[in-house]
Image 1 (tube, rainbow, N blue to C red):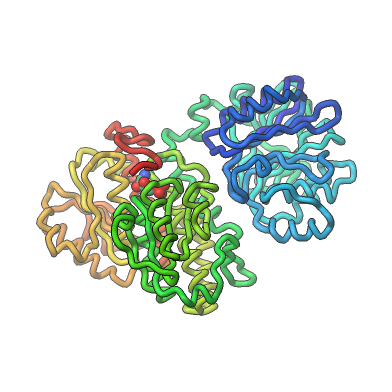
Image 2 (cartoon, rainbow, N blue to C red):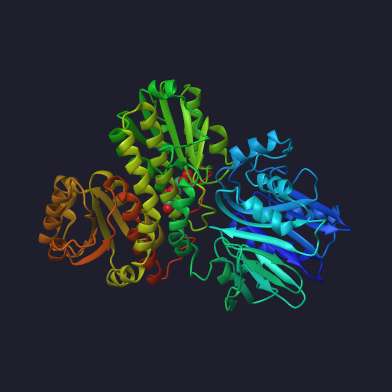
Amino acid sequence: MCGIVGYIGKKNAVDVIYNGLQKLEYRGYDSAGIAVIENGKIERRRSVGKLVNLQKNIKSNKIFGNIGIGHTRWATHGKPSEENAHPHTDCSGKIVVVHNGIIENYVSLKKQLQKEKHKFASETDTEVVAHLIEKYYKGDLLAAVKSALKNIEGAYALCAISCEDSSRVVVARKDAPLVIGLGKEENFIASDVSALLQYTKDVIFLENGDVAEIKENSIKIFDTKNKKVTRAQQKILWNAIQAEKCGYKHFMLKEINEQTQTTQDTFRGRISDEENKIILQSVKLTKEEISNISRICIVACGTSYHAGLTAKFLFEKLTGIPTEVNIASEFRYANPVIDNKVLTIFISQSGETADTLAALRLAKEKKSKTVAICNVVGSSVSREADNVLYTHCGPEIGVASTKAFTGQLTALYLLVMFIASKKQTISKKQLAKFIVNLRDVPKKISETLKLSTKIKEIAKMFQNTKQFIYLARNINYPIALEGALKLKEISYIYAEGYPAGEMKHGPIALIDETMPVMVIATKSKVYDKILSNIEEAKARGAKIIAIANKGNKDIVKKSDYQIFVPEVDEILSPLINVIPLQFFAYFVSVMKGCDVDQPRNLAKSVTVE
Ligand code: AGP
């Protein structure tokens, strides 16, 4: 999730754009750049690392212009580097582009453009856009952008300028936000309002498929049918801090609500309906290497470990490969029996967790093939593993991981199905059904997110509890662990997750009217078993909150509170069932007055032992 800013007017575009990028830095930064039109030429400055490096660069290599575009990058394709930093130019250097999103078909487009003698200078998907515009450019930048977009699949919010057509910024958006800020004889463009509020509160939000021409004194917007349209002008009443959180009270709440988009971004460009296959360009495991895998060893910490536990069910059910899951801090000091036939998978949102990184190095010493599942492009774990699958969730600011967790699950589903298809342990029909069900998940997540008010009401009843037990079975057992971790880490209430069948082997002694129980009781092959576990707990005085599927009547009699979630295929249910648990922990934490985004004693990335 990158940040883009554009400007056209009387001010020095460099200052306006730089100030705007500073407000977007929370969206992630590993490099940044600005391009302006000065004396009829494109002048571009780019720097890797924090935004302040770009400021130093521009200070020593001054540029000035009244029209420009800028970008702060959260890498998706291509490591963080100056040559991968935006803005990107075409061969002539007369057209520059900044982009937020993912061009799903950039590999095939790049190959075609290279055949047409276009020279590429970066590894990014975005550079393809600059060359496509060049290909169609015949003096009219707006027309060239419209033609270029017809070839592009994926998500984009982009700005383009040309030194040969210097009276306007051309912008476009599809599945990534873009907002126009309205000024007097000047106009602004940005990924979100936080970059604009210092200049204007009057904005126009572009809609999906819109292409617009932004001049000093005019804005023309065209819809997907190339019809000129008007979009509502709005006044933003947020202050800058509220804007960074898109109006949400906390980053964690914003990130919970981003999960419709982020799960989609994780599988975007990686499933082909036509060819009925999973496409993982960054996982170089051949069919033969896959058939030689004797065992899978997943290694991670915390929430990422819970994602690994879920994946164990998936790998063993769908690929038949024995799978174990290890806590990284234990794995690195044990004597793991690993060799070149073991596939080791390292799950880490930050890609910098010291224990996970040490475990990766140990596995590599033992000649294991390694795969990393990371959210931060260019992070240590992602760089040192043989293969990497990025989750593309954008920066996760809240210490309690939410969207990164569902991103990890989604990436693991893709990896499991990729391996299962190569091993032919699933039929084409099963894969096709999985693809249809996975594409339906974002819609089901949106439905689940609407339950927040109901969950908040339930959370009110438990804000003073001192302890909690979370129960589930089978593929949702790791979700019980994850829900308990969420409650522990942001509300400081002691909570424990257990496999529900384990209660009678000791933990049920804990149950009385002071021990509430959260139970995942969605449709599954072990649903009846879960019901009897609920009765055992209720009979001993526990207050029961049940996560169940809509329309389930018998759960009402057996539990005190119900959260009804949309039904999905059982193997995908963890993606839905974790969301009420994230909301529950969030609301209890807020009611207890805890620091939701930065809970005590915790860090977002544990880069030390
Ligand atoms: C999750 O809410 C916690 N913040 C923590 O358990 C986290 O998942 C763990 O530290 C692993 O971090 P990583 O995914 O960046 O490696």
